[in-house]
Length: 425
Ligand SMILES: *[C@@H]1O[C@H](CO)[C@@H](O)[C@H](O)[C@H]1NC(C)=O
Ligand SMILES: *[C@@H]1O[C@H](CO)[C@@H](O)[C@H](O)[C@H]1NC(C)=O
Ligand SMILES: *[C@@H]1O[C@H](CO)[C@@H](O)[C@H](O)[C@H]1NC(C)=O
Image (cartoon, rainbow, N blue to C red; front, side):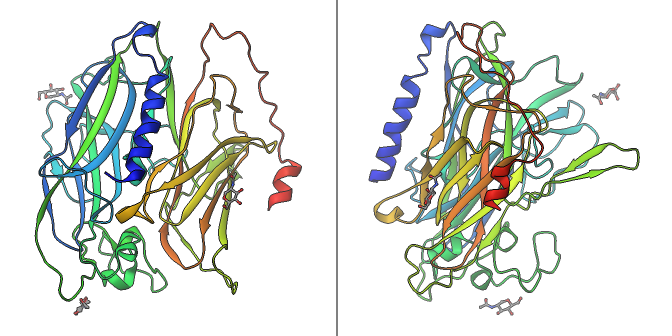
């Protein structure tokens, strides 16, 4: 086990210890689940959509989630061997009349009657639709929902008649053994994948230098001439904690994901209403800086975003890729809503993000106003170009704070456009 993992395990224990499961009147349930086994050879990119994955049944409050890649012996695979590009968990309703295969390798979700994907709460609808998980940081940074909150799922009143609620676990892994460049294969650099078409068969733009359109299912990254092509069995192991839903014990949270590539636009419709459109591109390219001394130069990306309905921040972290330093969400008045940093591994995992810092504010102490303009800022090291850079804030937001709370912050005043935003752009 690397020092990075041990460090992050210590963080997990601290977080879990503060949950104090028994004192809050509910029974915590814990489960360790596995996806089916898949095989990988050096350089291969594997993308699997496991429908009907193992997941807690019934009306429950999800309390924690964590995921890691393991080999056939159950040993954790270092990211320098198998890179977990992402592992995400989607929710859907399936009619009992409908049969869909448990494994779909394509990224096209079935458009059939009786299948409804249940999206998380935006704002990147259709792009970031999942509930749990993101990338490599999922191994060292569990998503933890602090008491008295829970992600409410399986509510029989919400599931359409004749349907079941089910879950898709998506795994995107890249085998980095014996590749020409581990880090460039992990960044999905086009040169090393030799691809001309994207996952939908459309020609890639000539200036597209790398990213997820170069490392979809079965794409092959260049391996060394003397590469030892041996197949290896891999599975995603995921850890969940949950409790039976009880509305006297739990307050529900919404799952939001903010993307630094989002270009939010507001416009007036013909009938005079203001409509907001989000354009979340998932990834971007960090260009190398021009400075002579490249050691300390950084790329700073900023965007303005907003949530139609705000609330109290319960939990937050940022998904950033290799080279990422930190990501910060500022409120309209310049206050820090959450600042989260990437945590890097050691030894063979040096240079890989293995965890991230989280924000778990006291309930009610960090609040986002309805429609409040926020600045999402992300800093990457820019000593060289990096393709497929990402910065996604995973936010759990609640409408309510526990009733026992002795103080209540006054609701945020939302002004149209502040001096602060002027300053930084
Ligand atoms: C399932 O099929 C039955 C019989 O064909 C039909 O009556 C029912 O409405 C269907 N249910 C759903 C959820 O599609
Ligand atoms: C790259 O792909 C083309 C076909 O698209 C193939 O002819 C060529 O041999 C490939 N090059 C390498 C280095 O794999
Ligand atoms: C993010 O990282 C940069 C570079 O190390 C640092 O200058 C900046 O203060 C950090 N931002 C925050 C909010 O910590």
